Image 1 (tube, rainbow, N blue to C red):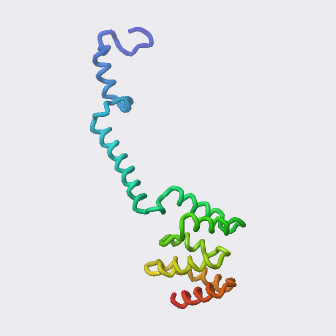
Image 2 (image 1 turned 90 degrees about the vertical axis):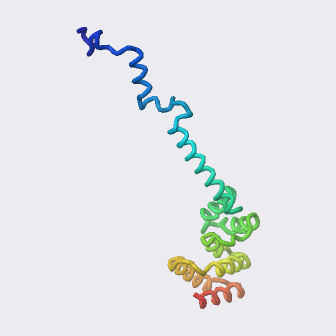
Image 3 (image 1 turned 90 degrees about the horizontal axis):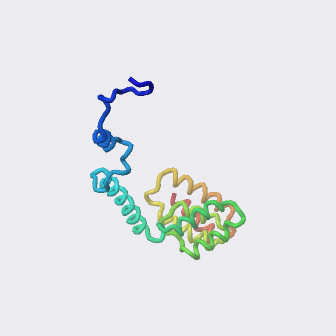
Length: 166
């Protein structure tokens, strides 16, 4: 035996055997033909996920759009800052008042524009049914604070009315 080799010339595999072993190797998985069952199922799973994502986005309407999500995230990021009121007004002007987005409506209650806050409160009032105890507790505390700080008579009256309802 020659130094550095573990096999004799008689035991050495042929090139055909080497190629066959290489084809069965897990290292060449990316070079498999695209018609293999594994790659077809992986591709179909990926396509199914993409189609479901598109369908969900279509059923959500404008709320599923990237622009809407970006605006909501900007609104959440600006919460408590000086630019929040302007962002809230721009958000409602661009997307309208959200009908069924509980968390965004709660954010809009902190807007200094009493008309916008009252509109958000009316929308929240329609969504109260079916909310969890934690969400209702958060709403109660928000409304108590609003009742103490609101200067607008309509907003205070609406706040008191909803607090009695809860």
